[in-house]
Length: 207
Ligand SMILES: [Mg+2]
Image 1 (cartoon, rainbow, N blue to C red):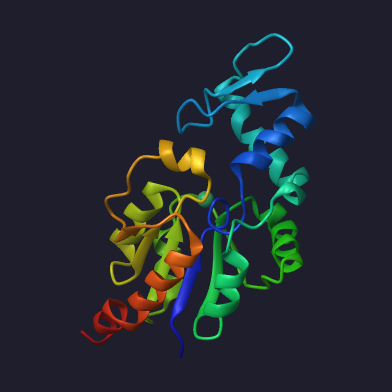
Image 2 (spheres, rainbow, N blue to C red):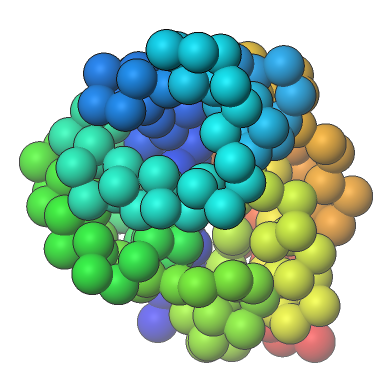
């Protein structure tokens, strides 16, 4: 029985903001500007400068997951960190992606040597974090604060690391008070994860 590392994909393992911006421009003639953390409201049609209607956001995101995942590269240091951590932990990916596009993500990750189980989730992640941790010392890493709220509620024994790999998003995203730590780079995150599963995580499992 080994500790478990539960990872979000976008902005934790793979870059999302820049490839999504590139795909929107090249495939949909839409400009995405990060004036705030929200994606909705920051998109404009390049032909006339009109804002993209909020109801068009989810179809655009689905379109990216169907057509654009090949643009996503690993964030700095993640491949090395995970090849190291997998020696002592079971690594699983918990990603909010349509189930129909899960296999594309599996193959994309495998192309970088990251052949981990991928769970396609919808909505809050806390219940799945609890299930995947399965009572073992565990760490959950995600860029979105609401997922840390949910994990704190459903899986309080799991270490919660708030990571936002993209530097622009990192400066815009709200704090995640439900997380135990905020670390945006993998070398430092790797140390924190190892310290958690060998320290607080292990003790909480026994208690
Ligand atoms: Mg994410």
